[in-house]
Length: 276
Image (cartoon, rainbow, N blue to C red; front, side, top):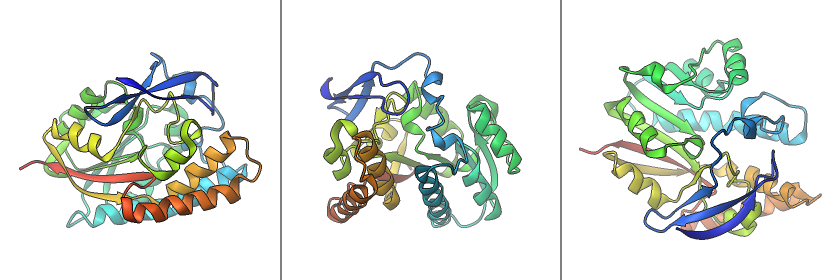
């Protein structure tokens, strides 16, 4: 693997990291990968594990999250005939599962962060700490919303995912796309890299190849339109731009417009099923 880009952890430690390009899979790998990632999540700014509405960034995040929740449910309902069992991995504070439960799904979830599990429990959704708690169970739908890029021992974890899926089940995975315009525009400042919490950085090619090894195939790919704006906003803040909202809006808009033709959106959702 060769060096693709040098960047750093902008949100917690400030430490430098390299992104190495795996040409066979067309994906980037974060190096070095800390043995203990826990401290890199310990920040009030890491709001995927909170329900904070303190800052403007928090409020925008929560507003976008509410809209995305409905989009996620609709995406899943378009893939299935009826409301069935659903497992969400990396469930955060449980908002997606609360929404899925209200839509008629039988929901379960995994979240390693204790604070996030506590917040989810208060909303009526109890989460497990580890995938091992579901050994022997099968689900019709398994979702990972911006989670795959966080998982150590990637191929081992992918095997477990597939083993938990019903034969006719649906796996839905959303990940940032380093091939997008906003990724190229911001370079080392692109918030979608989020090193070292993001260990892997996927392209459409890498998702297809990695899951083909597990007997899965990509059935459809869907854009996550709001991500271009939110990621651009964070990227502008990392650059120290005081007019970050204005710049982020135009970069996010241009990224989405270009992606209409290139299909390389800031983030993409993949629907996968077992190969027949």
